[in-house]
Length: 160
Image 1 (cartoon, rainbow, N blue to C red):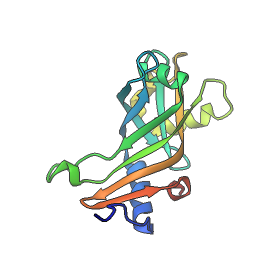
Image 2 (image 1 turned 30 degrees about the vertical axis):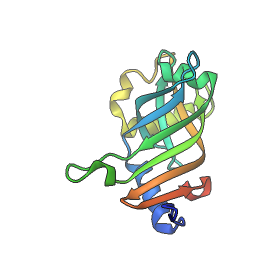
Image 3 (image 1 turned 45 degrees about the vertical axis):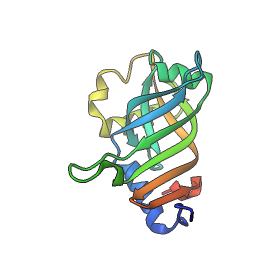
Image 4 (image 1 turned 60 degrees about the horizontal axis):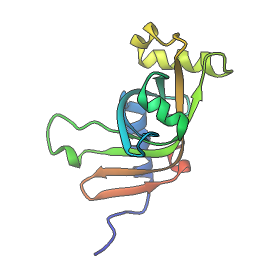
């Protein structure tokens, strides 16, 4: 049986970037430090200035505690459309390492302003002490571009 993974091309790179740019929410996968089992949470995301996902997370959330114990994670973006089989719609699973940007860090103010442009309701809590911005420094990604269209992407493939 032939591999379903296709060679990564410019169309796949553009689709991956589009999925990151248009995402408002994503499924964040982490490892629960108390059990070692996978834990998935829905989080709000925006494209950061570099096009990679930027999120706002609370220290009170289980996924944040898990990331502090082990920053390796995955973020899936891509919402199914209203019609058609949801499994044929494009989605991107970004793998990488979480990095927190806390209040007072040099980039926090600019990134917080950037985040609020796309997620304005977060203005109610972005200033709370238990919230931090989170970036995922990618080490790769897996793209499903539709039925029979699978690609492995490198960090360079994801850059704008």
